[in-house]
Length: 345
Image 1 (cartoon, rainbow, N blue to C red):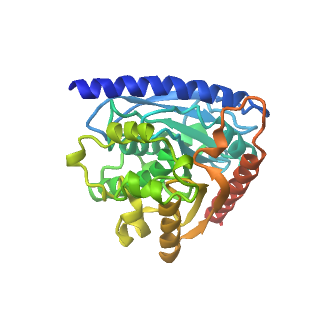
Image 2 (image 1 turned 60 degrees about the horizontal axis):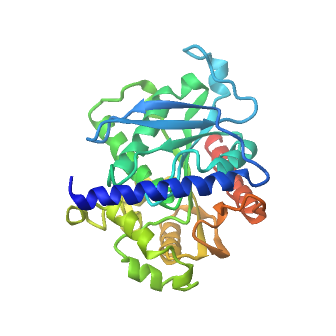
C-alpha cells in the first residue's frame, strides 16, 4: 500500500472518531431515540473483497423474534415490512447506529422493522464495495426474512447523504443481481423470487459524480460557506473513488442521476421520496434528479427543506430537540406507510 493511502487511512480514522463523538451528543438530545434491538453479522458474497457486515435491527412494539423455523402460516401473514437503511458519512465515516432517530420514527409510525447496514467503508474498501454490501444485506434478508417474521416482498430502502446515494445504487445493482440469478436459475431459496422493493426514501443524496466538486459548490444557493469543507469532501472522494482512473463518473452504481432511462424505470421502485436541503452543494443535482424521476413515471414525493444545510437533522446539540426534523421524519414515514399499504392491495 502506498504512503498516500496510509495517510488517507489515518485521516479517515481521525474523522471517524470525531463523527462518533458528534453522533453521541446528537443521540442524547431530547427526546432520546430508541436503542437497537439486536444485530447480526453476515458473510459477504457479492464483492470480490470477502468479509462480513453488521446488520443492526430496530423493531416496533409487538415484534417478537421467532426462535424456531419454519414459521407458521399465521405468522407469515403478520410479517413486518422491512426498511433497509444506509447511514451517511461520505462512504468513509459513520456506522449503522447513527440513524437511531430515524429508525425510532419508522418503528413508531410505520410499524416496520428497520435494518441498518454496516457496509464496509473506504478507503479500506473503495467503490463499489459499499454498493455490493448493500445488495448482500438485502439478499440475506430475502433469504432469512420470513423465518424472522419479516416480509421480503415489502422492502423499502432509506439513507442519508452517501447512504441516500446507496438507496438508488443498491436498488439498481440488486435488480441486476436478481436478473442474473433468475436467468441462471440460481435462486438460493424460493423466498428470493418474491424479493420486491416497493419504496425508497433518500435524504440529501449525492447522485451525480459527473459534476465536479467545484461545480457543486458553485451551485449551492447558500454559498461556499454553507457547503461541506473542501478538506472533508477531498477525503471522501479520494477514499471512495479509487483508483480514480479506473472509475467512470457516469457509472450508474455511482451516479444514478445519469443512468439510462430504462435502467431507472426497471431498477427503481415506483414510490420514491426525495428530500433535499436548500443550502447544500448537492441541492441542484437532487432537484434535477427529482424532475427526471417524475418524468419517467415514478411517484415522487418528498420536498426541498428550506433554510437548512447538508446533514441539518443531526446537529450535535445535546440540549435542544430538533422539532423540524421530527416533523419532516413524520412526513417521510407517512410516505412509507402509504407505499407499504399500496403493495398490500
